Image 1 (cartoon, rainbow, N blue to C red):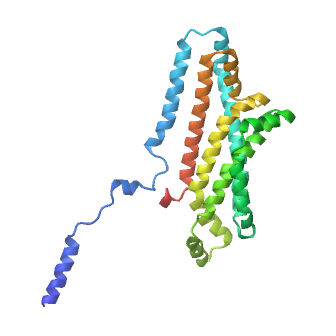
Image 2 (cartoon, one colour; image 1 turned 60 degrees about the vertical axis):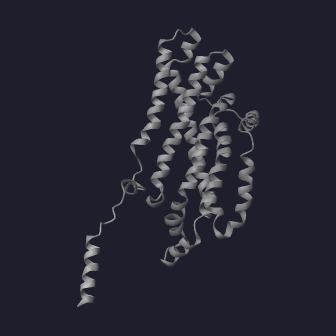
Image 3 (tube, rainbow, N blue to C red; image 1 turned 180 degrees about the vertical axis):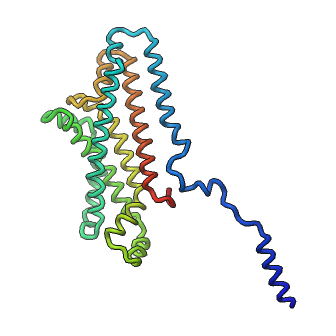
Length: 271
């Protein structure tokens, strides 16, 4: 009977013991793709552009500056700049990710060290110098897109290779033991686990493209480069600040949007 009493007391103690509750931070961890703090970047960007636009509207500007900061012309150049940047980003992802996947497959793994070495060395090449060389032979939008794609593909390719290589072999073996095919392991295991690293490379390439597109003005690509370098030639600091501010805001917003997309594609457990 004493043994039965002891068992009952232990059971009562288990029932009476306070249950462990998950903290609010633990409940939120890895759950939400978008939170209220994600609004800070676009709001700050809008506030900065709005404040400077208000200053330009009330400042005493000469006719050259007034023509340069005309809203329709500035909006057109900004959209051209964004269009070129997004075109470069799409081409970079379409080239770098499949190529990175290819060289991490068993028949082509011997190529990956060489590609990583080329990618690391290629990042040291000055983008302005490459644009100048290409400009000797070709000018216009596609010349800039080609050189910026070639330049920006390197960080994404490097991160794709590294991201896929860091996936634990035991995880892949477990997936294979569950009967997954090679394609199933790639798309349902390897790529989802590599997305944080691939996404970091893509965001670097995007910001790099937005910042470098301005130099394409030298070979007739359009964008905010005309506003930026025109203001330097004419010595109009108001226009220089506007062009620099818009390029910085575009870079921040593109990185912000890419971060949300990366978070959305990242498996919930590793966000």
